[in-house]
Amino acid sequence: MRIAYAPAGRRDAGTAVALARQAEDLGFAEVWLSEDYLERGAFAVAGAVAAATSRVGVGLGVINPWTRHVALTAMECAALDEVSGGRLTVGLGASNQGWMEGRLGIPFAKPISTLEAYTAALRRLLAGEVVREEVNGLPLDAGLSFAPLRTDVPLYLGVKGERALSVGARVADGLMLSVLSTPAYVRWIREQHPRPDLRLTGYAAFSCDDDGALARDRVRSRSARFLGMHGASPITAVPGLPADRATALRERLLAGADGADLVDDDVLRTFTLAGTPDEVAAGMRAFADAGLDTLVVMDDGVSPAAPALDAAAACARAAGLLA
Image 1 (cartoon, rainbow, N blue to C red):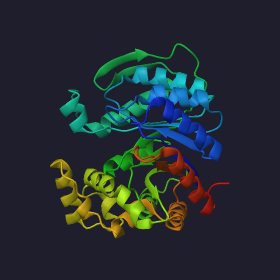
Image 2: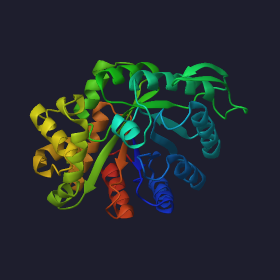
Image 3: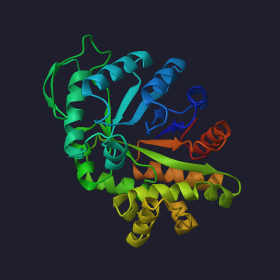
Image 4: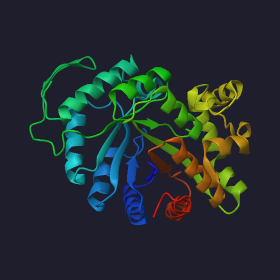
């Protein structure tokens, strides 16, 4: 299993680039840049990361089909692949109605079929083809004006519903598993979608301290928020979170209330890499044993990031996953 790192989008761009260089020096295999609205734009930061590093893979995780025309995404991705020397992986996701329609005013309909069509068109454009078809309700008759560095840039889908996972397993090179995915969930996906070449990348909430209770307390409220986003779904159900607890966490999220009191230490041990160095190393090893291909350690955007990154590397070395 490869170990990767994701600087938080709330970090300023210079700090994100410095953290990416640190991750490369520590031996991490990849650096992933998220694009959560309205944080720093992923393409600009990814370009700076690509220019400042020489070895790590550079991932976008994730961009959506609503805010960028597919031709623009192809232009940006092909240029970024050039800048990085062929180190790019592109993550695509459907986003959600609350952000797209509710806050950005972009009509949001048929997210899974739209994402599937967008992915297919983007793949063809990045392969250097001219695409003549309707994409996301707009007629397209265009192709890149230059030969892309690679014609097979990996495309991953960040999906979580059962139908969306089925689509992703069929059309993408890999799946990006949402934060708070678990080893049990990884095994479940492998069982449901036994495609030998399907790559699985998963984000993990990380907090490490010699005082395990302190480490878990740091991520309790944040984990409650993410569990509320997932609600009663395979991500929460497969590892055993009761449906009524998942529903209550979602209700708290929608009400704008903290659900930390609903997230006990057992829940955190199940859904996060939070605890002592030994506990975190064991958690990383469990993901490898479950069949995850890449584990992305998430920066929480609040803790001192450089020491946390050093700690993540130490845990990965202890787990035998980093030289």
